[in-house]
Amino acid sequence: VQLQASGGGLVQPGGSLRLSCTASGFIFADYAIAWFRRAPGQEREGVSCISSIPGSTWYSDSVKGRFTISRDNAKNTVYLQLDSLKPEDTAIYYCATRRFICPSPMKEDQYSTWGQGTQVTVSS
Image 1 (cartoon, rainbow, N blue to C red):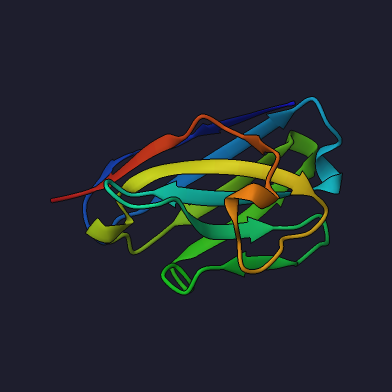
Image 2 (image 1 turned 120 degrees about the horizontal axis):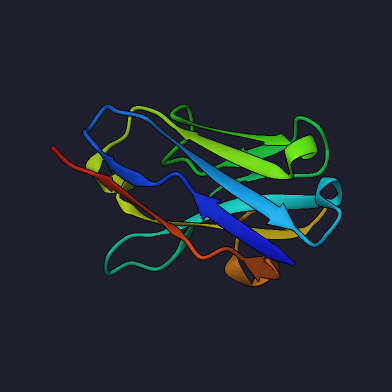
């Protein structure tokens, strides 16, 4: 079971990025995929999650309306579209997985498999 996160980079405030999380080794359609992030000096926080149930998504208040999560089961990939980026969005973004649903609130110990992280830096 593996997750591979990609798509991070350096972007100016107000800009956009699209992160990808590609999975292998399990029945992707049966699993929820979540994104967490860890900013420098801070604990890892839950950002967004998409469950195996079509249309079931969750966002933290800090990104609601700016980030959009989606999945393509044919490609075993979840996307996180980051729009209207702010300097406080700077962090390492991690994807993680668990079966079926996205519990709320999001907690790290709810997820069994993690990707390696991708750096997002928002700076002028």
